[in-house]
Length: 203
Image (cartoon, rainbow, N blue to C red; front, side, top):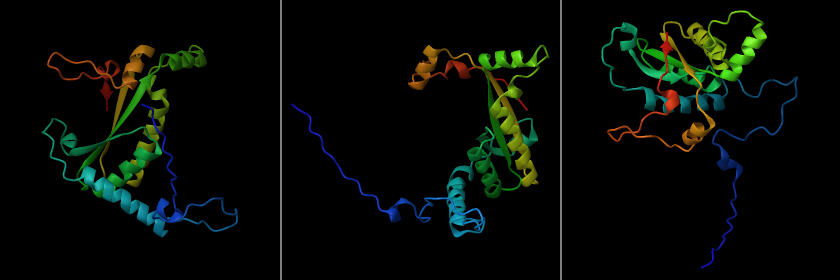
């Protein structure tokens, strides 16, 4: 039995691409006024869509169990935080959605890459390097964005959770992680990937 091949012609009309209007196909002249500003209707519409989506995910989260840290007991939302544009915008918008008394945790993961460490030691020329994690790009951008959030969101408690993990993933195990393969515990539940088993955290 042979296989047949059906070709489908897809027609996309410009009006169906986006509800916020047509996209620019070229840059405006340097001396022209900006096309988009903070008060543009399309900007306001995009922010409204993001806020509405965020409300579904951060509101009405159950109160966590009481812990020793009083600030932690008031925190229900955590953001995986590299300091890049996406996560920083999410944290900033979460500030507008959540009650003022709730904290927001920013979880920043830095990987200790042996090749990077070797190059840093070479560049240091004998100088002592005490914390390789602080030299990771995500840790640097994370701390800068964390400082900016504290500056523009006064009254909100942000906690920067600095997580460091040693990069011990071989090419073989990395392939298994990419394929989504997980080992099973004795009770039949999947265990976490080996490179995530021991991640020390510091505040």
